[in-house]
Length: 631
Image (tube, rainbow, N blue to C red):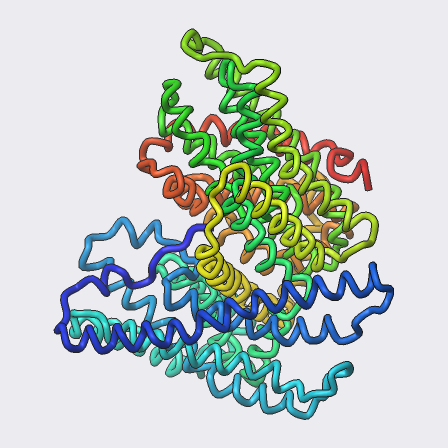
C-alpha cells in the first residue's frame, strides 16, 4: 500500500555537479530503457489474455499457446517492474522507525537499506544465472521454445536492480556516509559468515535467528520487505543447511509465476483507468445525490463509494485515490475535520479488503489453492457487515450535524446522476457475471473489465460527460502499473522462498501441532489467528503476511474444522485492521498522503473506527454463514 523512497534523503545531499549530472543522466536513460518495455509488457498481457477469451468463448477456437505466452511474458513483467520500482524507490518497506530518527541517521539508514538490497542482489546473481541455464534443458509444451527464454528474466531483473542500486549510491553526496553504510552491511555479513560453525549445530533455533531476528531487523531498519525476506532466507540456507542457493531462486520463480497472479497488474491498471476516465467520480456523485442531505451523509457515501470502487480496482491505493479527491473538499466545506476524514478513509480501506477482486483474495487463492471464485463470492457480505458497524459509528458521531446550509437533491437530479453513473455502476456486475458464467477465468476477467472501462470510460465519460480525455496519461499509468506489480510480485517471490525454508525445517509440522492442540478448538484457533494477523498486518503489510503464513495456517484451519473461505475472510479483515492502524500500519500513512492530511490529526478519531471494525470482525468470525452462506 504505502511506498517510500529508499534513499531520497541521502540523494538530496549535495554532490559535485559534474558527477551528479553524469550519474543522474545515466540513471535516467537506463530507467527509460526499462520503463518502456515494462509498459509494453502490460499492454501485451492485456491483448493476449483478452484474445484468449474471445477465441475460446466467441469463436470457440481456443488459443492453446495464449496462457503459455502470457506466463513467459509475466515473469519478465514482474522482474522489469521490480527494477522500475527499485529505481523509483517504490518497493514496500516499513518506515515508521526510520522516519522517527534524526536527518543524519535517516540518511545513513536509507543508504544501509540500499546497500543491504544490493548485497542480496549480488549474492543471488550467479545462482539466478545458473537457474536460467538449467531451464534451457526444458522445452515449453505449446510454443516449443527453451524455457530459459522465460527464466532469463530473473538474472536480467536482478542485474538491473543491482545497477540501479550502484547508481543510487553513486548519486549520494556524502561519500563517507556511503562507505560507512556499505562497510556496516559487509561487517554484519562477515560476522554471520564467521559464525557458521556455531550456527549449524543449533538446528531449528536458526529459524528464530534468521526468520525472526534477521528478517525483523531488516524490516524495522527500513530495508525493503522483499530484500529483507531474501537476505534472511539466503542466510538460513547458505549458512545452516546444505541446500544449494539456486533452490531459493527456483522458489522465487515459483512464487512469482502463478498465472493467477497475472491479474495483479491488470487489476491495478483497471483501478487507474476508472479513476482517470471519471467512472469513479460518477459513482461517487450519484451516491452523494442520494445521501448528501442527511446527517453524516457524505460519510456514508465514503463508506459506500469505497465498497463499490473496491469491487472494480482491487488496489486499496487506487480505491482511496479515486474517492478522496472527489469527496473531501465538499465534506470539509460542511465542517468535517480533516483528521476524521482520513481516519474514516483508512477504516474503509480495511473494511473493503475482502471485496472482490481484492489483490489479497487473489494472492490467497494462488498460495493456498482455495477457489478464487469461492473467495470472490464469500468476500461480499463481510464487507457489508463492517460497513454497517462503521455507519453506526458515523451516525453517532454526526447525529447533531448542522445541515441548514445543505440543499437536498431533487428527484430529477438524482435520476440524472444515476443515468450518468449507470455504466460505471455496471462494471462490478460485468466482472462478476464473467467469472460466474465461465466466460473468463479469474485471471482473464480483469481484461474484460479493462476493455469495458476503456470503451465506456473513454468514449462515454471522457468524450461526452466530463470531456477530460487525455491520452498522454496512458503511458505513465502503464509504467505505474508495472512498478507497483513488480514490487508486489517480488515480495511474493521472496516470501515464497521463506515459507519453503520454514516448511523444509519442520516448522510447519510443529506449528500445526501447537495450533491444533489449543484448548477451545476452532474458536481458540480463530482468536489466535485474529491477534496474529492484526500484528502481522501492521508490520509486514497484507500480501507478505498472507504469502508467508497462509500455506502454513490454512491446512491447520481445515484440520480444526474451520471452512477455508470463512478463515480467509477472518484473517484478511484482521490483517486489514493492522494495515490501517497507527502507529505502524502503513496503509494509514498512505491514506494521509492521498488525503493530504497530517497523520497526527487522524490518530485520535481512528481508534473509534478501528473499534467498530473489530466489532464487525468478531461478528464475521462468530457467524461463518456470512462468509460461506452463498457458496
